Image (cartoon, rainbow over the protein chains, first blue to last red):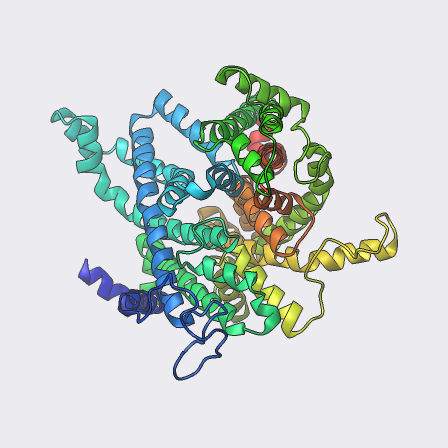
Length: 285
Length: 334
């Protein structure tokens, strides 16, 4: 594991940049545990202060410190993204592996449902769920809904890997040795599927974070809990762009764009590492 | 022809299934939720001042009829299908008494126009750039443009749109940032109106193109760089076929097939991006209608727009599926 990491850092510039970016942002987000102010308190500081030595990134019209708000916001947004990622990986793995291994009718049924779900537009459905739940909508519930919508592409990918493993020698050995279907899937096939899962996990994390930003920008989440989208929502509510409080809008946007860039670089470099063809071409020059 | 008919039948079945499941899902979400939409609307209306209890009871009854909440669960489900098939979602509460359906029909052309244009541009441009970048791997200009579109790709549509809005609306105010056309112009085929529609559509369309182009670029580049090493391409090179012909006929054409499938699969996501972009730029399409409906607590409108957008995306996917045989002779000839 560590030697893979070392190789990636040495040979892959994209991975290095992505690793540094994501790592820095993660440390910045973790710093919110040492924040001098509670992150949900408002009108605590003088409002609308431009960036200065005292308030590094200025203060908002709601009397909050932008620096510590972003720090807490990124932490919350990342927590949401990771929750969605883990939940949806479980569904994708279960559906993909079962479908690919069993084949036949079960495969057909599962993949038909899968393709049907892919064709449904996510955002309107999520908005509908928010609309009927309203004030009872909490972030874990939103994460669960997003996870239930976000597994289908990857289930197909995982299925195609399992499909190719099904006819391999070692699968037959395992079956003849008396292993049950769950045993074959977990003990024999899972190690082969993990690289793909890892890659889809990165993409899913990016998607989930994007979803969270989008929904909370519109105010469709708990707006009092600091999130990156929530900050932009409040900045829009206070007309920050018109009244010239640019630091309230620009710094969250910069932070979230850097986060996306870092995660994306990690995702593509991991994908490249998993694909032996492109790995060879890189090492060969 | 047999294979073609089979292909069509399978696609049509999938289309019906998507609509069936999508509409059922919309029904289940709204009818299984613990929050009663009637009570919600009643509390919205009786928020300001006291209301006679008898009229509240009447209101409650009228609303539950309007929302299709009378009878058993199964009866409600059948009635909901009746409404969808007739395209009748009742009147909108926030712009009473205009029917929800005519609001949707008024907004639909804007969304369809914006989406068709931006999807077409981003798909063509992304594929062209991606194919070139996969074929001419060492070209510096292609590498740079690739890096630019790939960096924008993971950022959500709202953030890209907001950046464009701040740039062209505040820093360098040259483009209109709100609405679908100038307010004082008479809608019609006059030069001024059409010009205004185009100018107003520039920023929303640019947002969607910038967000969409990256994924096409990435997948096309990797498809092409895999096909380039295929035997038939190597053979053509050895046979002295010009590199232009190899690129367009041997490589790009083959790589386009999965990209068209990808287009059909991604439409649902693209629509989601359009919803957000329309709201950001106050563009008069269905996305803005949906979000306004949520803000004003308009149950019929939100349910109507969601259901209709599921149906509309399914139709668009089906249309792309119908186009597929045109570029893949294997499906056409079976």
